[in-house]
Amino acid sequence: MKAAVISAPGVVVIENVEDPSPGPRDVVVRVAAVGLCGTDLHILQGEFAPTLPITPGHEFAGEIVAVGGQVHEFALGDRVAVDPSLYCHECHYCRIGRNNLCERWAAIGVTNPGGAAEYALAPAANCVKLPEHVRTEDAALIEPLSCAVRGYDILRSQLATNVLIYGSGTMGLMMMELAKRTGAATVDIVDINPDRLETARTLGCTHAVTSADEIEQPRGWDVVIDATGNAKAIQEAIGRVGKGGTYLQFGVADYAARATIEPYRIYNQEITITGSMAVLHSYERAARLFAAGVLDPEVFISDRLPLTDYAAALQQFQDGKGRKILVTP
Image: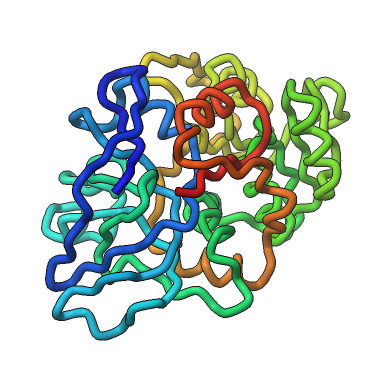
């Protein structure tokens, strides 16, 4: 089969690799679409993935074409979305229910070959069957949505909060949609990309601006979310949190990124600073939300490119052009 392979930092090649073969509790999925995300850029830079080469692609969906001998809940032809998370279920963090902090954390498309290929191997336990009305080629959006759901699990939002989100890419827009559905009174978006801001306005944010100074919020915001991973944006975002508010680091920053905090302010104003790491008990809920129409794929997906254009797709994503970019093997 053909697969996109990150063979060395900054190097993407399309190669013929061996077809995957299922173990007893595995399935093989013919990939209909795989999404690009910031994690893929980190892998391209040589971060995250413990070893290269690796076939990336942790946001994917497709059709089951082979099943292991002990798989009874799925059949050939079933259409599924795949949770890429792989946990050991034995370490301290897994035993206390914090599997996303697993000491042996792994993931399809990060540590194991992923969905940027014609076929991908996945544990049956990680698959969610798609209802008839959900298009397989759209269901790659479920994985990033599950990360957003995890973010809101961390926030434990109250009704009538004022929310400020930095970044109106795919993840910022997903966080915006969930903010609206978890009872936010206002949801404001900051970005420097005019096309993305226009999409945020189309989806119904309260304000979409290039600087939070353009919004009258003298007491700051109850919830501030960074969905950029950009050090400058992070630094500014932390300063926008109001008294008793919460800052969520949701965007994936470079390892070298740094931000300065004011310990006295955090103490005196009882500010919470927290993070959200990937997926935890949120994938199936995201699949239900997606099936219920919480996202409009026609708005969120800006490009669908062939597997042969995977390197160009990564470059387009890195350049900030478009919204969710899907590759169709």
